[in-house]
Image (cartoon, rainbow, N blue to C red; front, side):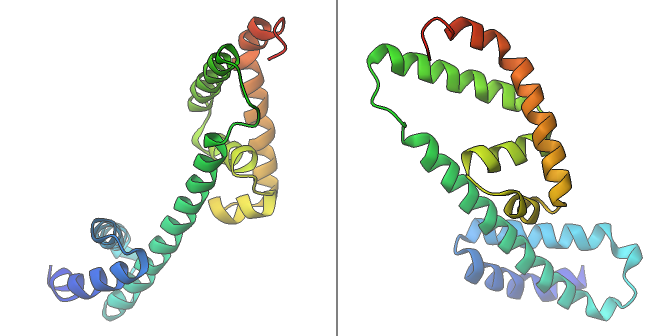
Length: 166
């Protein structure tokens, strides 16, 4: 409790400089304290806890910025249709988007992450591996398995629209 009282304010100021949003800054600091608490049994030098908290806040802010950048790219990509559509094609396109979204939600979290980063954010395997914190081989495995699962989940949709060329 003493550590929290002595470090909280400074850590929030640090986080606010990194993320600008006060609520997000407070969330990052809280997350840093939770992580420290969970790993307290492994802390060898308790006097270094403030330094650990600072580096955790910086790393969490960096991760948050990376995530926000990825989602901004995904949002931009989804917002700009790749074709000028008639009303019917627009409805069909929206229906397909909804089906793909539903199918993505049925994948494991890691499969969903790598597929969204690859196909919506346009990242390469190395960038994805760095973003999600795994090896390139793991990215390839999750991509392959995730795409196979999507194909199975979306097969009825392919048959519904095969006659329209959508």
